[in-house]
Length: 67
Image (cartoon, rainbow, N blue to C red; front, side, top):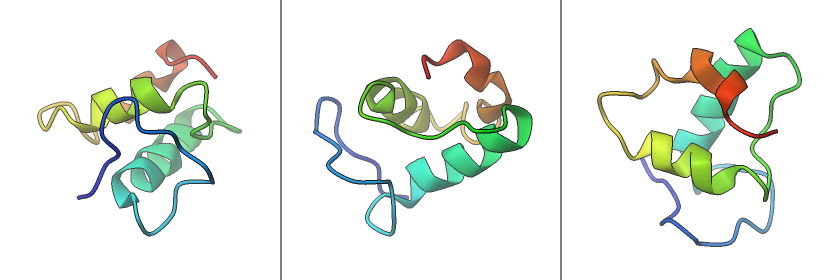
């Protein structure tokens, strides 16, 4: 599943080009309503998505990712 490379700027809401971020945001929002991937937290979310053992099971821990 495609993810941005660390440090790559996110210019719009995660969509078809980064389904991993969209999936993470969906799973995280189920536990933390209102969660979304933003310019401020995209690097942390992308880093989690790049860890195959942590994805998507890491999404419930999204409270630890800056909003």
